[in-house]
Image (cartoon, rainbow, N blue to C red; front, side, top):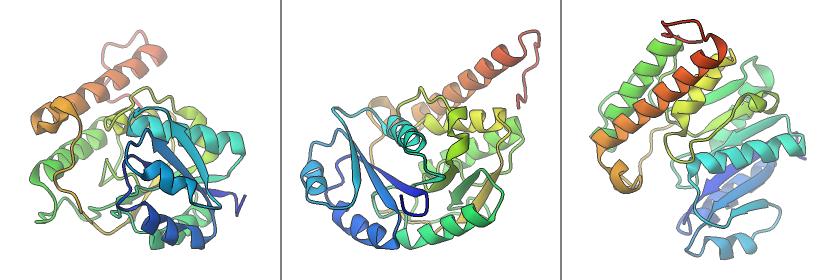
Length: 248
């Protein structure tokens, strides 16, 4: 292991970006894990041509949440101290990795979370209005219900203290996984710090899958997952309570 830090990159059909991203990440000097979530393009071939990286391959597409769950398990089993996750669509800049590592190794937080909106969800023409609106709504809901003070609920650029990953039981395989994850962060009383990262959108037409491409359906789905996880925690920890808001 290199410095006991693992960089994990979930990928699904990322042939357009994969080579460039890896060429920037590998020289930073930490171990790199790529989780190929059942890619059907040239991604598997590109990964076979890469050296000095670890690869986990899902036989079929299981979803972003499941890819992160695979990264969590790998980091724990391999004995790393810190896990850093980032996307492979060039919306997360590899040169920010040392910033996350420094914050992880010198601070006291359990989780270092990137934020694209450190001063609020300002209007930005590059960001689809529905995504900005949903992020703002969900972030406010999480803060109100869980007593947190985050500014970006959906940023996947994060550093996790591996010792705390056993607190998470991720059963939501898709993009709604953060709704479950934030509740579990609060339930375990984990500390969170945020690092500003640049707001970059290359693909405003990205699909979320089926009915979730409808923003209203997507927002309702996120809220349902959040409420279900919140209720589960209240039921397990305080079965006699009738008022479980907030539950942390």
